[in-house]
Length: 236
Image (cartoon, rainbow, N blue to C red; front, top):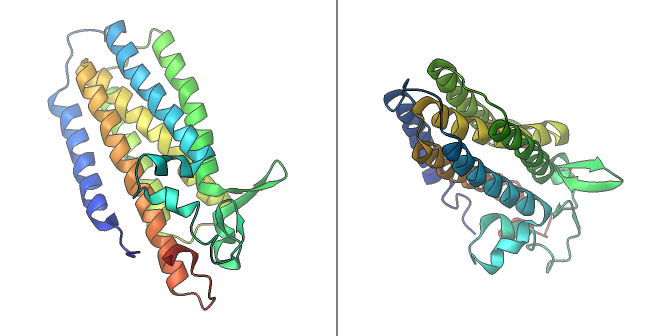
């Protein structure tokens, strides 16, 4: 298994995606009037579908392997079993991976997946409120929402790549990512008053999520590579 696994290329694409999102919000901005309710429903439905998918991935990371044999996070749920290494929170039961888990409801859970699940549930509530309430932010506020959303996504990725976060911090950094997705899509829709731009924000959010998963996967591989134990769960 490659220690990079396409993560470097995905980071470059994600940065490009962030630049594209900012350009769309700026050059596509409109001050003609309020966003049509139909456009809100379209973008809101796409967001709901993406957050439901996020919840399913958080609850059962391995289900995508039936659709994608190379699914990066699906491998995390299976590798290491053949080596005899036990698992807690779908991570190897060893001291190196304990900071990647949290104790909750009497169980050991993956901090990243738990954060993603909680953030997705909360974001679903935000989508429902957004579609239901007559909210019409100004173009400047809408563009600020886009910038804040990108900042939240970047902070989540930076935590994975640059810092030695422990369970609670790791949970929080994954929790804020769905909020970032929500703010980007809604900010694009409100600033441009065009559902196509909001949907573009949802699509780019999938790119960011895949990048976050690959960065996490790369860190897991590096941890196993530098470990003296024989199991090598993420090198199978």
